[in-house]
Each structure stands twice: as C-alpha cells, then as structure tokens.
Length: 334
Image (cartoon, rainbow, N blue to C red; front, side, top):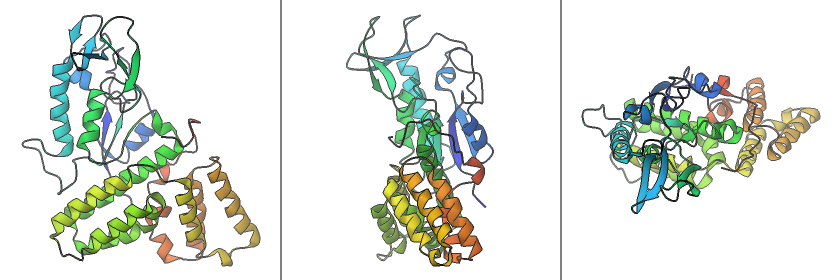
C-alpha cells in the first residue's frame, strides 16, 4: 500500500478556470495524481487580485531587479506578488505563524507540480524581458512564485506539467514524491527502528538514483554518534532532498536492475534471460521507461518468492496506475 503524498499544484492545472484567458488546463497526470495525493492549490495571479480573465503579466528587468508588470495597463504587480510568495512559501515550508508544524526538517508538502513557463509559477524557461520597453528582447529565467516554491520545499520534488510528459523526469518525480511521503510517516510516528527499516526497503532505489547519497543516508540512519532522533530526522530529510535533486543516470538504473536480476537469473530459461537483457538495452536506448524493467523483475521475484526483492521499494516505487508509456520525445535531458 502506497502512502498519500501531500502535493501542491498550480490551480489552473485542472482545478479552476483561472488562467489569464479564463481557461483551465486539463492535465491527465495531474488528474490521476489527485486520486492518490492530498492536493492543495493556489493561483498566485488571481489570489493577488488580478481578475479572470485578465491582461497578461510579464517579468522584466528594471531598477536593478526583476519586476512583474502588466503591459496593457502599465500596472506593476511586483510588490503584491512578492508578499504573496513570502506568505505562501512559509505555508508550504510549514513555518507560517499558526500553521500546523511538520516534523523537524520537513516542509508541509512532499512535492509540487507547477504551471510551465508562467511568469508567476514557472520553474524553468520563463521569459524575462531585458527591459519594460515594448519590443525588448527576452532571456529565460524562473517565475517569482516558482522560485519561492523551490526555495521553500528544501529538495522536495518540484516539476512543471510540461516536463512531466517526459517519462524519465516523470518517473523520477513520482519516485521522489512517494519516497518523501513514506519518510514523512516515519518522521511523524516512527523511531530509529522504523527509520532503519525505511533505509533498508529503499536501498536499491537509492542505489539506482545516487550511490554516494545512499551511503550517506545509511550512515545517518545508523546514528553511530547517538544524536537525538529529531536531529537525525532533520539530517536525513535534508540528504533525501539531495538524493532526488537530479534523476538517476541510466547506468545506475541498469546496474541496480542487473543486481536484482542476478538473484534468480540462473532459474530462468535462456529465452527469458535474453528477453530481459534485450529490455535492458531498450531502456539504455530510451525506447522504454525504467518501470518496464521493474515490472519484469517483480514478476520473477513473485514467481520465485524472492522476499528481499519483494520488500524493496525499487520494484514498486509508486502506484502502478500512474505508470505511463507515453513520452514527450525530449529524451532524458533535464
């Protein structure tokens, strides 16, 4: 049974018609996630007083900084947006006055899905104009609220709906999101034994994502220095953010999959072994997602009752209903 992550989502992604043009963007993955996560939403532009529909806003360099302006009206919306970002970021981080405080070292949510390229919510490839003058050239940057969310969540997975159409980015995001939710359960009601069990169950997943970080997490969980458990949780949570800061390299996934495969490969027929090794090459060539390899491995682990593998999150990192074989065609580049 998978936990229910706490997920923040830009409100226009299927929850309300609050885009500048009065539209709502229906996103299939976000719709599915709503069935498996506890979702909270916001629309920074609407929530700071801009109407629906509204004239678009843009980011532009002026006065030594970046301003949010509305060219049609000449209105400068920077101060209102900055105040909103600070308040909402504190809420998502779990540090807002009067808010329910999350466990030590954890934000109030396990991850976020933001609207791509939005001057408020965008986390990447947002147009930032070089001046407020008409016809000014634009560079790429980050939205004001997108920056606030990234800073507030301390390494928790944050993506936009456009990038999540790439299956490598999507599966990495989902793996990190559900790992954070499982860690939250340990932090809220567990102790040292539960943290050690968490580390053991995630060993192969962590090995595939970042071997050096996996080792650091193991040392933190072992707590040989006998630090107080809240301090251990805080350090572990910070390292978990580092762990999922970048996606697993294909070589790491392949090496971990082959390690798991070695547990029963001699009990398979030559044709079955060839089938799996061919699938590994398909993954290496970006023709299939990692979840296709995991499905094969789990089927054989069930068949041969390999309890160690069946207990590993690596083979089932997030609900199978969220597995998609479609892809944007953008490859593995983040």
